[in-house]
Amino acid sequence: MEYNDIYDKDRRLTGRTHLRGTSWKRGEFGLVACVWVHDGEGKLLLTKRAPEKTFPGTWENSGGAVKAGETSLQAIVRELFEETGIRAEAEEFELIDSGKDGNTHFDYYCLKKAIPLEQVVLLPGETVDAKWVTFSQVHEMIANRQMCYVIARQFRRQEPALLARQNQKE
Image (cartoon, rainbow, N blue to C red; front, side, top):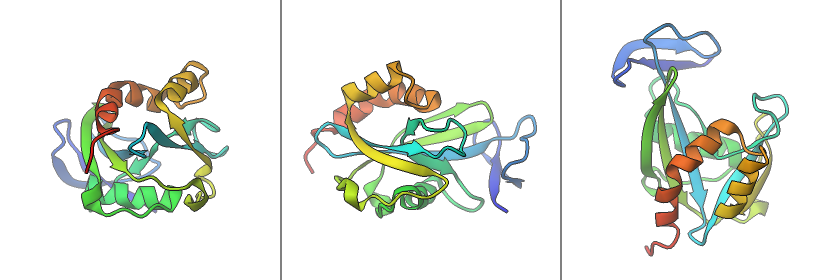
């Protein structure tokens, strides 16, 4: 069983936890962390959702629910490794956006890491494929409904911040 911390509408911890897979009560919010992995040269890493998941067979960035006791940064380090096998230190991630939708608060990170596809380790039941795509390819995927619509909405909102980071020098 997995538990998540319960937040209020203003993202304050309530001191209570929620059992994953059960309904949220009115006024309760969870926290989800997502990451856009980019290579610094105009490409983003996407993974394809497994057939048994919601939005099966659509493409997305990595992310997931923050477990009880975790910060969003700890969660994104864990989620990225679980879904792709990519190891990154917390200080490598940059928070680019936060938001709220329904019963969920979101933190959106970016990570510059040019990983060869051969090194991506897919998680059975979660991911079935991975690929590097250009920003124009992401737009085509959105138009062709190949990308999860929730992720497509995030991408449109965060695209300017992601584009700004593509050619930044270290």
